Image (cartoon, rainbow, N blue to C red):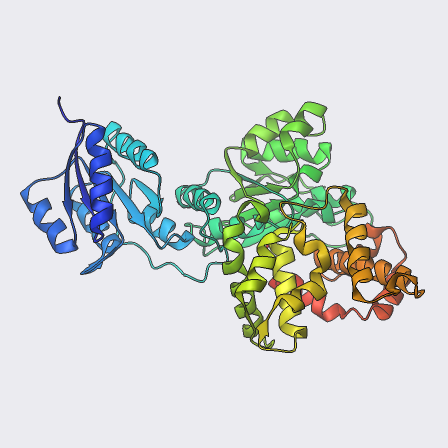
Length: 485
């Protein structure tokens, strides 16, 4: 039988070389192996394989450092990179180095076989180049298979200007994805401008997007540049795009089609030199079906879809995220805390309806309030209550179930705890406090906007801030430093 291709597999782990080699031979390939960069160079000197599969960490150097040099001389050679350093940085480095594909360890042999087949099917045409150093402190954290898929898509779109639509539940990190695409791409030196559609009054959205001229409407005393102008040369992140009113959708569509816009009240045409990244926590396809979102705009935005997993769908990342947020809290001046294995198990069992944002806020509270250096299950129980045992999602009965679970936790504290006349105030405060903090975070600490969003008077909000002892400066700082959306 004629071999489908000549494959060179480079890995310092003999077991991986054997397993990968046998799997590819069963697909009909002619496989040779090497254990180091020096062996790789020697084999390349004897003749090129059809596909090169290489690990990153090798005994005598970094496999990724050699990829650009190989591709400079042999740009048609497909290179597939394997790595146990399965972070976004590695995925981006592999892409910038010119790799045909990147697979995080552990990988599925069938996926590797498909990547090899893809490499054989079409030769690489990208020019090689020296991989640029990438900041390993990028805020996207996680090594789960779900996040690896996200990293691979990001790595493939950073070098172009394709429009990206990021979807996912609130708190999953949609703005972080947008920032990563901007910071790792050719527009990194230009502005990154974000606009939350849900936080802007409907009648002001067009002025916010496109700017306005003096006298365009009552109160417009000067010309103001909109987000498209502010982001010129860079990236415009349109968050909560599903909340955009229909008339503004129509105008945005025209801009995406023509690449040009005019300010509100203006006549001069302005070139829209921006990359668009949009995000939503809603099902836009369902909104299109119900008539709440323009179908043509949906397809204009959904060129490259990126679906972010909920935290409950990537539980193996929780320990990594928790320790990362504790380190961040220490960098921000809070006491440095560590978390024990039993506490990690409690975190992994929690439903996380607020996703990564909820976990970050919890870690910051624990860093500030726990008395000991080590965070244990008692600390978590005090803050999570029995919600930590919910499991794969929120309580089945939603808020009602969460309240019942909290009542059970209070009842377990001491005999008569539910009958001492304080339970109403306790439950209301425990629900109201995170609600107010979340709404202040959502609106950047702006009390007027938060009050309007909740449908209460600003003076009422101020009184509740005092009663609940909520430090507004903390919410503002949390909003500026937020690691998600």
